[in-house]
Length: 58
Image 1 (cartoon, rainbow, N blue to C red):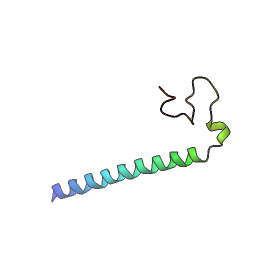
Image 2 (cartoon, rainbow, N blue to C red):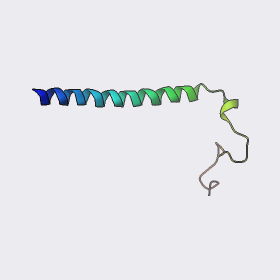
Image 3 (cartoon, rainbow, N blue to C red):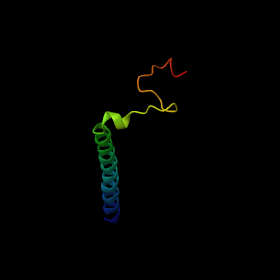
């Protein structure tokens, strides 16, 4: 009986961890999506351009 309780607890903990990671990622994506474009862009020389093609990055 004790092994079943331990396995159920481990399963609940694992599912909770996965849900927490998913929720954190969804929250970060929403925060980035709501960021104004003027704040999200970078005009400095060390910034990677957002419209670069793969050949331009070589």
